[in-house]
Image 1: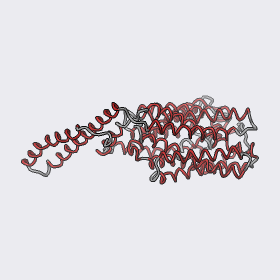
Image 2 (image 1 turned 90 degrees about the horizontal axis):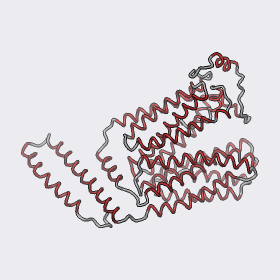
Image 3 (image 1 turned 180 degrees about the vertical axis):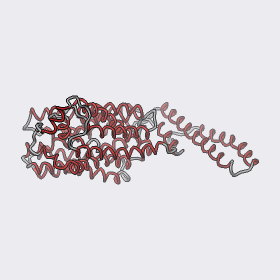
Image 4 (image 1 turned 135 degrees about the vertical axis):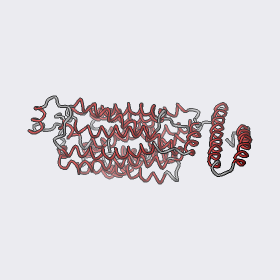
Length: 472
């Protein structure tokens, strides 16, 4: 919701700072730059700090940004606030994925799908919320104007009277309510995250984290680089098609604006619906299987889009299938990688940056190419090319992930597993001692203390015994 609110309120923000839309487009660059910085900062913080406190602070930063944006009266200040706002969003995005993996590990595929379904749900609901809050102020783009009428008497007089004004209440209070409602919601969620920070973690979570930390694939760094490229093209193709299908349907296919808007809606509608359906599919299907099915659907639908680019019926059907196929790819990719190697904060930040770069670079490049070759369906070629690339790349990733470990890596992993199990065993014994001291008399306690070293010694002998590769 925090990210999607900028689109419907863009023109109102431009009026608020007395600028036209074209000269204020740098706010998107500022937010994207902050998002990249936030992803890198979040990757470092999540490896050395409690995840709940990092997410809580990032949501507080998001809340502050949402409340400040409507009060900005100069473009430079608005871009600066957008940069800080994007930084908080970048930390939040990286931290949310890492938190799911930390809590549930390789069993968290349904939870990962639920997380990303809520991303899609928020993006779907925000334009509706903005329409209700702003009312008729959102109708300025109906005639595709790129310049705003800046000769509003009240606005110009207030700015001329205070030319150096940095912060002030917006003239349209509906703009303030739109941002304040989402800001209040994010603040409430941050309170719950801070409450979780003070909740004591159970011993089971500690043992789970210890076991996950020992898992590392043979080609760990190569897998991260390939996943970086995978998400670069996947997210880039997703955002490109969602951004350009409206104009493509009007200029290339000859649809009416209402039909083109419906085509855009059916793409994002099936995208959000299938992300919700993927929550239940993840309970019975492996993440790798879901990625293969998504790749096949994307490849077939994009191929039909290219072959029948002038057919309206094919465009409707293929767009809905393409949106449904793209839905589960990102969360399934994260869950799939967690099955073979542990994902730290820095690792998650790395492939989140890849998706962010794809979101910025590919739509910008396609916009330039579409302008140079207006008669070619460049958008559809991009979808097909990205589908082919991801379909070829995933088998390579799977081959690297399933490569057998060397003997030395097996020995190191076995040693780390033994240490984790031994620590958990000793913690259990200490916990049992603390409970029994309040129930047993002095003689029984002495007997327990004398017997415990032998028990620990026996456990050490069991753990240190050689273990075959098959049982490991």
